[in-house]
Image (cartoon, rainbow, N blue to C red):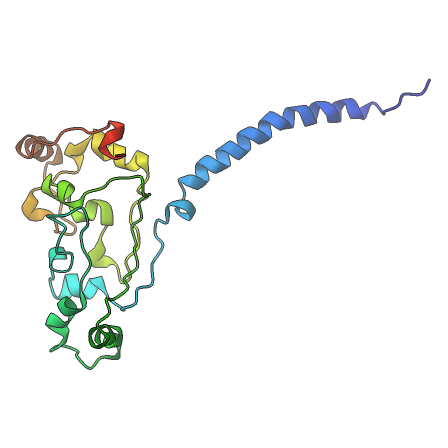
Length: 215
C-alpha cells in the first residue's frame, strides 16, 4: 500500500516541532532587547521645544547655572521649568527683537505659560525626587548628560530600572560635592576615596527595596 505522506514529511514535522520552542525563545529575546533599546526608552531622541533654546550658548557662553532656570531642583520632587518672566529677565534687554523669541513674547502678552515638552520620562508608578538626589550629591550630568554640549536636549540615559539600581547599589561611584552638582564635565582625581567620604558625610545609603521607588 502506498504511503499517504512522502518520507520527507517526517523531517518537516520534526523541524516544525523544534521551531516552536525556538520561536518562543526568539520572541522573548527580541522583546527583551526592544524594551532596553532607545526605540522603547526614548534615549537620544531630541524633543522639539516651543522655544529654540540652545543650552550650549546659555551654559557654556553665558555661564548660566542649571538652578537659575530649574529653580526648585533643590527643594522639590520636580526640578521646575523656566517661566516666561524668568526668560524675560534677560531677554527684555538682550536680543529682545529676535524672531526666535516670538513664542516667549506671545506667552507674556497672552498670559499663557510656555508649553515646554517633557524630555526625560519615567513611568507614573515610579517615584523620583530631584531634591533628594541633589541633596545627596548626585550631579545633574549623571542623569541628564552633558547638557552644555546639547543644542536640543535629549534623554541622555536609558532610565530603566536596571540603570537606576546600578547607582542605588553603588552610590560612591557617582557622588560629588554639593558645590559641584551643576558642574559639567567635572571629574575628581580619586572617585573611590571621594565617594566613600561623601557617602559618610551625606548619609547616603544603598536603597534597593521596592518601596524606595514604587510607592
